Structure formats: C-alpha cells, structure tokens
Length: 604
Image (cartoon, rainbow, N blue to C red; front, side, top):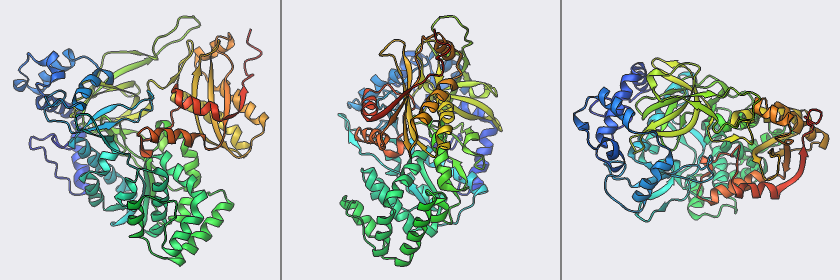
C-alpha cells in the first residue's frame, strides 16, 4: 500500500520537520477536489479485479481510464454499501481464502470495531496503510499543536493507552483492536521519534491486557517522571477521567511505591512488574512532595489535580467530541484551566480529519478532512418537518444523492461514505457531520452524532446530541445540590404501552429524592423534539423514568466490554442502548427510580 500522505506518483512524502508536513497539507488541502479524484483512481487501479468490484467494474478496462472518467463511472455503477455488505467477503478472508477478494494485496490483519453502535464488534481490514495513516495523522496534528503549545524536545507524555488481546482467525489472520495493532507496530515507535515526545510507559504496560493493572502503572510512572511530562493523553477522554478517578483511591499506595522503589502487590503480571521495576527507583523526596500535594487536593475534591501534580504539562490531548463531551466538566475540574485539545477524527475504517485549530475549546472544534487518506463522499441529510399527524417516520433523516468532497456546502449535514485503500468501497460510516467551513479547499467538519444512536418510540426522534443536552440540563440541578453526575445512558422501553424513555444515572455524593425528582421532570421537559412533545401530551409516550444506579455500575459495563475483547482505550459508554447484557447490569444495579410528572396536567 502506498503512504497516505502523498498523491505523487512516487508515493513518497518528505516531511521531516513540522514546517514540511504543514506545507504539504496546505498544498493538498488547496487542491482537495483533484487530489480526491487521484486518490480514488489509485485505489481502484491498485485493487482492480478484486471479487467485490468485479460485479460492477469487471467489464471495464480500468487501467486505461483517466481519473475523472473513473470517478464518474465508479460513483454511477458501484452502489452504496453498509458494513453488512462487506461481512461475507471479510469472513471469507478470515477463514483463509487467499484470492483477491477485497484487495489485491493479501490481508493478514483484521481490526475489531468498538461495537458501541450495534452492540457487537465487527471485523475491519487493517493493513500497513492503516498504521501509516495513523502515524501521519499524529505527526500532522502534532505539527499544528506545536505552533500553539510548543513542548520540550525529549519530554514525556503521560498516555493512558491500552492494547487488547489479539487472536487468530480460522485462516490465521491476526485480530485485535486497531489501536492494539498500532501500538505493536513500528509506526508507534517512529511517531515518538518524529514528535520528539516519549510515552512514560513501556510496551509491557500498554499491552498488559488488564486495564486496572495498566492504569496503576501508567499513573505510577507518570508521577515518577512528573517534572518531565509535557502533556497528558488518551485515545478517548473517558480514559483520562477514569484514571484520575482511580487515582483518588490509589494515590497513597503509588506514593509508597515511589518512596521505596517498589511495586504494589496488586500488579501481578510478570512482564509488567519486571518492566516497571526496571525503571523506577527509590525517591523519598518526590514521594513526600506528592503526598503533601495529594493531601491538599483531597480537601478541594481534587480540583486542579493535573496542574498540581504535573506542573510542566502544557495541555491535555484526547478525543473530546461526540459521546465524550459529558466528561469535559469533570476533566476541567481536574485541569484547572489547563488547555484541553481535542484529538483528531477517525474511525476503525479510516482516519478522516485533523484538528488544525488546537486553541479552540473541544465544544467548538472542527476537523479538516485530509484528502489523501481515503476517497470521501457525503450524503446530504435533511431533518423531517414534523407536524401533528400520526404518521410514523421510518428513518431519522431524508437523504439526497451522495456528492464528492468538492461539492459540500457550509451549514449542511451529511453522512460520510468511505472508499478506502483497505478494501471498503462506498461504505456508509454512519457518522452525521456538519460542514462548518473550509481549510483552503478541504471541508472542516463538526461531528454531530452517530446516526443509529437514537431514542425513538413513536414519531419522536432524539439523537445522542439531543440526549446530551437534556442530561446536561437535568444535571445542573444535581450540581446545585452538591452532587455530581458520574456517567449515564438510556434506552427506549417499549416492553409496556405506552413506551417511555429511561435514563440511567450514576452519581457521586448525596442528593435528596426531591432533587432527583426535579431532575427527572426537568429532563422530560428538555426534550424539545416536536414528535416527543406531542406524544407526551397525548400520552402516546409515557413519563420519562430516571433510574439511579449504585456506584461502580458503569465500571461493570466497562468490564463487560473488556471481557468481550475490547480495550479500555476504545471504550465509549453507549448513550442509547438496547444491548440486553448492558440492560441487565443497569437494571440489577438500579437503587431508585423516579417517574416524571412534568406533563401530568396536559395528559388526558
């Protein structure tokens, strides 16, 4: 596979400095439309003759066609597809068939998607190209960050990153999460050399396979190198918040290990123990300094933990958009004004865009599409204009025909469609984005929501983003009562008639029943979707239910995810779920239930 950061015939991109790589991106983004045409041409000529494409392109002389004609042909004869359309082909590869099924180059590795949307993990092709684009994404993003937040060369990164266990398919292919493959690749080592920043933790911690033991060791080494840490990072911001919540209980033991150069007996993995003990040494003065800081932090509920313990950290860097936004309040509590930099936009299938404006807060971040990573199309989406009729809308949006990257318009919402070097052709990603502007000629995207993550019972349609706004309003009442929302999820309960929305909250601190009852009513009223409001007023949707679950419930959901092959670094709490295993955990852990009375006076 050719490197993604080039559309020149030699496939090379000489980007040895920050200035080089930014100059390269400025060039390709100015010509994004023509670059995209060339990228599609390269993908199709590279994979001409594969089984999947032969159904539509087998009778054409692809190799002799020019790029524009090939783009026109491809988008007119190859249909849009979902991941389900590729599953039989991927399964054949997993079972050991060696012919050109999706790509001409044999596949040896498969990635596992997170499974957040549909409740099950999917196989996605992973190649050298996948690792290369990850390296190039991190290198390019680091170049833009360094303009705003320069870091010391040779500094450390406290990275809360985790691999999952790998396994072999029937046909001998290696399977694991995309991050697992990347952390084990040469590109991960190259990334540290190129960015001149080195992770605190050796590979034995990253790949340990037990996220609790790995988190302890990440924290231990992060504090051992505390004066050298330039920034703090994780794949998703959940990983950072989860680690700091754990630290509130672990700090004394960690300080003890630093004082004596030992390692807690809770760390039982031999390779992990050996790696950590080969790095740390007794440092009583540092331990005393950290202990004093932690005792002060306890008195202020750990406000400013990051700036107090890592005084030279310049920023916190992680994916902070979409389902991660609810954790920003807690992260800001820990960060005490330290800049939060939203990481870049991608999926298991492909990287998509980078954050070229790192000084923007996460709520305002956009992602400039890198036009060399894949061939991107965009399906225009339009919200239904709802009236008071009882007609049931089958889908969440009205769609138009897909358009190329060069034709998108500011303010319009789209679903992304991918054609990749790794063998996916016109594959619908399921992400809803809005075009917020342009970086030269390439669109800057604002992530809106996952299309399938939706609450709906009748004519109501509420997205993940709608739910987040509702929960934020309800949690404001909780905060006034000096309690804190730890995490949440929801589902549409249609087991009884009328169906209703059920929202599960895990909270920290004590809140009186009257406060929680008020939170429940506030959220019920905060759903402003016309279909929901009408349905509540006519009792075709029942009162919203707020279920309070016991402390540690969402960690049980995380444990379930990890036990089924996921990695902590890939975990996203599903904001809307119908997964029976997750619902069983939630229902078993529910300790209080409140039913909204917000519409009592209007219900017939």
